[in-house]
Length: 281
Image (cartoon, rainbow, N blue to C red; front, side, top):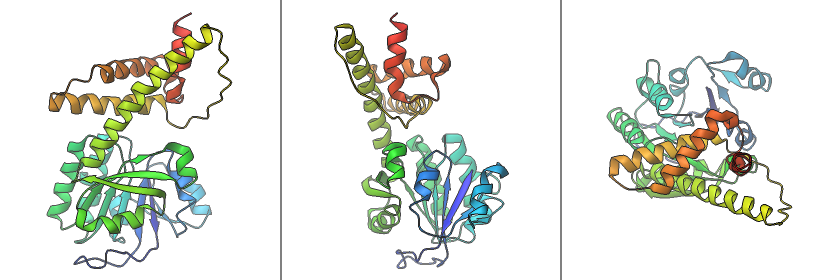
């Protein structure tokens, strides 16, 4: 796990109890390296794998020993983690963020997780006098590399301007979708549509090639099939909880799960086209 701290004067100075110290960025996905190039600030880094911190240390970053160690120096924390369990561990676990967070700290989680996780973390943050937003990203690796990520945000509308200003260091847009959990809900629905649409595209391409068409199209992917399977699982859980039928989403989830278990986990989710073509032989 990596924690990035940038030296930045917080724009949310109207909030009571804020400490004018660096903001921290714990990124746990491939977004970390491309986005890092656009921060333009000094970094303080933590990772559970020491070797992952070596390039950052060589570049002049300061190394910390835990998320809690870093949060004590910061007025803003931005996290991006792989799953529900990781978010709960980093925020609520021993040595985690909520254990050491100061009153008035701004917490932004850019993971893609269940909306209930965002609400649980927000409740814990509120008890500590901190302010929490969920802000998952859309756009993939290429958008991160060009600082064109879109942040899909849920949280307090009165403080959104401060969050928007900070997130636009790494992206081109930050859209408020509603209260805490709304960013996750919108991201899950967006990715369910993306997964279903990609399967339809793959079927159409496969049919067209069989009918003699030449696609003449090269694609550079950036979103692994295992991540699509994870997000479709979140959509399925949310649908079950809200008693919403999503038959196409369920079928897409099943197909991507099969791909992951068949050795396609780290291939771009658009490789469903190749998978369908191979299975149809």
